[in-house]
Structure formats: structure tokens, C-alpha cells
Image (cartoon, rainbow, N blue to C red):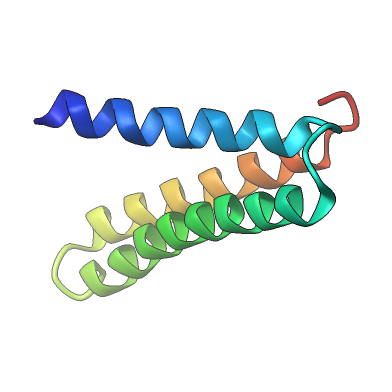
Length: 86
């Protein structure tokens, strides 16, 4: 079951990424795909940072580690989106 779910999600994300870059796809569909993929990544990164903040109360090191991972992922995503030669 894990492999099926992984295959489906990978297929959806890869198809969405390729369609958002293609000029043959209408603009409103490309923009919608870009927004949906971006919202997913923002949700995941926000969840990691939120979990880190909540875990600061009980395990300070784990909280700092989770917040650091979330901030690192955020910086990497921003740098990847800002690159000109995609």
C-alpha cells in the first residue's frame, strides 16, 4: 500500500511540475498547478516548524532541530524558486 501511495503522489507532483513549465498548457491551469504545489510545500514546512515550536516545551533540542530543518527547507525552496535557469 505504501508503494502505491508513493507512486500516485510522485506521479501527481511530477506531472504538475512538468505541466507548470510547459507553454502548451493554458496559463490559468499552469498558475493553478503552481499555486497548489506551492501551498502543499508551505503546508509541510509550516507543519514542521509548528511541530518544532510545540516540542520546545518538552524537548528543547528536538524542537530546535525541527525548527532548523523547517527553516532550512524554506530557504532551499525559496532559492530554488528564485533561480533564473530553471
